[in-house]
Structures are given as C-alpha cells and as structure tokens.
Length: 133
Ligand code: ZN
Image (cartoon, rainbow, N blue to C red):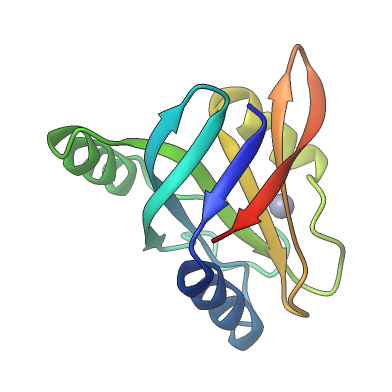
C-alpha cells in the first residue's frame, strides 16, 4: 500500500473526536482499494470496549456488522483508525499485533491533531502517505 486518501471532513471528525475524548477512540475506514491506494468513502466510529487511554479494542460483533455492510455495498474495510493520548501517532507494540491481524491501513491520530498512517509489510512497519482530499 502506498497512500490513504481521506476526505478532509472525515479526518476532521476523527481528530475532533480524539481531541475531546479522554480514552482512545477507534473505528473503521470504509472504501475501496485501487492498486496500491486506499480510498475512504466513509468512517464508522466503534466503541473502545477497553475504555482505556492507552489501548483500544473493537468487539468482534461490531466488526462483523461493519464488514457485512461494507461487503453489501461492494466496499471493504480499507483501514482502522484509533487515537493516542499525549504521545506520537506511531504504532505501539500492542498496535503491531493488531496490524498483524488486520493487514490494512492503520491511521493513528492523537489528541493534539497529529496523524500518520502505517501498514505492516513483511513484518516491518511502513509509513504510507495520508492524502487529504
Ligand atoms: Zn495505538
């Protein structure tokens, strides 16, 4: 994967929610892949069922619902997003385990408006470009 294309309004919604939350926020980026690029059509916020400022987890049932809806629409989960509080938007060791399970784009934001995206390729963290459109 090379780039993640996301609309300004969607990124802003994620950043605003992250800024106003005292736990990590999380959710799904739904859209389509075109070659090496992911295009986000919409975002779905999910419950962080760990209710924690240092980690997140999305329930399997919630994941399944989002996955089924996306498939019905001919789309896919092109990425996962979550926030960090008071630390850089860079994958934690725990995130790496999640990235190993979900081999899509990982958009990480923080509560001061920073954002970066990564994928795990051949066991290595690779940063991809976030194209705000
Ligand atoms: Zn994280």
